[in-house]
Amino acid sequence: MSHGPEHHVEHAEHSAHAAHDPFERRVVLSIAIIAAVLAAVTMLSHRAHNATLQLHSEATRLQAEAGIVHNQAANQWAYFHSWNIREHAYRTDLEQLDLFAPAPDSAKKREAAQKRWAGQVAKYEKGLPEMEAEARKLTEKGEKLQEASKEKLEEADHIHHIGDRYDVAELGVEVGLVLCSLAVLTKRRGFWYSGIACSLVGVAVALVGVYQQFIVLPYH
Image 1 (cartoon, rainbow, N blue to C red):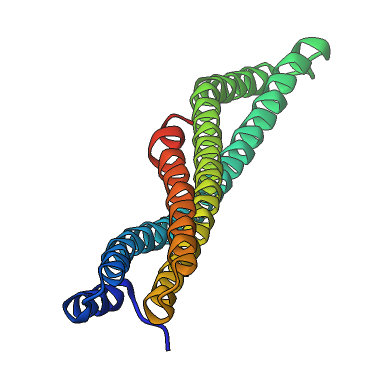
Image 2: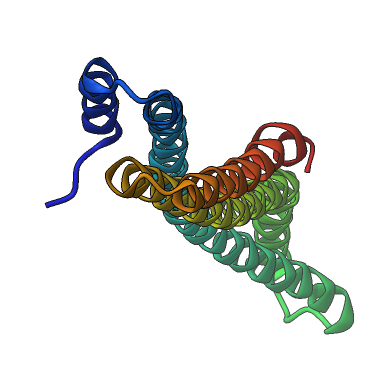
C-alpha cells in the first residue's frame, strides 16, 4: 500500500526522535526535507492534470458554441440568398416590361405591375445589406469561437506535457525518499547519497516544469 508525503514526514519525525547515531539523524533530516519537497511536487502534478481537464472541458464548450453559431450563420446566409434571388427575379420582370411591347388595353395593368415589382425590388434592396451584414457577423463570431477552442486545446496539450514532467519529478523524489529510508535501515552512505541525487534530479525536473508553466506558457 502506497503512502502520501505526509506519512513520510510523520515517519521521519518519529525516526528522528529514535535516532542516536549522527549519521542516522542526518539521513532522517534529509528524509523530512525530501518528503516536504515530494508533497509540493505532488501538488503541482495534481493541479497540472486538473488544469488539463478544465481546459479540455472549456475547449469542448467553445467548440459546441461555435457549431451553434455556424448553423445560425448558415441559416442567415440561406435567407440572404433567397432574398437576393427574389430581388433579381423582380428586377428581371421590371426589365422585361421595357423589352416587350405592351398588349392592347393593358396600360393600367402594366403600370400596376411595374409599381408592384418596383416596390418589391426596393424592399429587397433595403433588407439585403442588413441581412448580409448579420450573416457575416455570425460567421466571424463562429470563427472566433472555433479559434478560441483551438487555443484552449493547445494550452491543454502544453499543460498536459508539463504535468507529465511533474510526474517524472515526483517519481525521482519518491525514489530518493525510498533510498534514504534504505540508508537508515542499512546504515550505508551509498543509499543516502543516491537518494539525495535522485531527489535533486526530481527537483530539477520539477523546476523546469514550473518555469514552463508559470513563465514561458503565459507569454506563449
